[in-house]
Amino acid sequence: MQRSTKRIAAALIALALLNTACPSGPKSESDIEKAENKLDKAINGVNALAKTARELYRQNVINLQERQLAGKIVEEANDALEKVADRVALVDLNNPESVKLGKADVENLLKLAIEKLNQFGAGGSQLQLAAAAIVFTINETIALVKLVKEVRQ
Amino acid sequence: MPDEQDTLATIVKAMSLLNSGMEIVDGLLENEMRLRGLSREEKQAVRKSIIGETRTIADELQSENP
Image 1: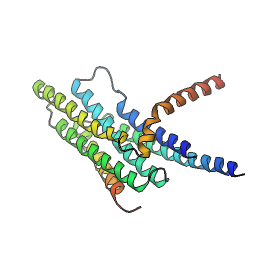
Image 2: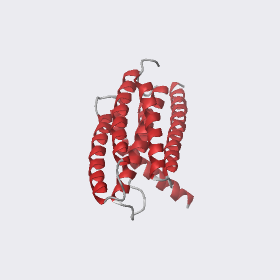
Image 3: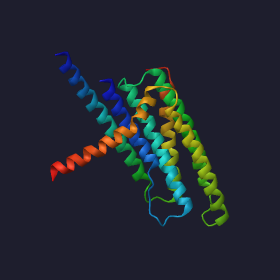
Image 4: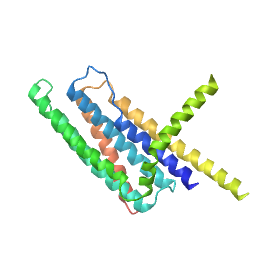
């Protein structure tokens, strides 16, 4: 039972992380728009991670200490992302220099925010175990989808 | 019998977690949709709103209360 719940927990976290990592938007978008899209993915991803941690605690997958650790990490990542959002708001799209500087700042700030998120893999908690199972879960899900398609055909 | 009970408990737990997972993914998609087709100013307001919601949850996660 423990292994199953950990793998499902891993799937939930994987979904949130995939959302953060996946590129999106039209190819014609400007550099600053690309950076803004990354920011939006990250903001949404952290929001989902917070909800995931809350749910994992409600369902006894993680303990109080692990929930508090997750809360701390979410708080730090969220604060970092707020700084990025504040910086994006200052960019003047009609001023090429402002766009150039804004893009560089936003990307650097995003890197810092993602470093905070990477702490999810630290601390030896069940969250770490869940994170370690992510790749396996994704591969297994892909295999399952293929199987379902084959059966339907 | 204990094995069957354990399997049943696992299925129930899995269903419950998957249901929660679906709700979380729905929330993700909803937030993505909220940001689509908005002006820059409107997007900034939505970002602030999502960041505020995350902060509230982060505070809740860090509290001592179960």
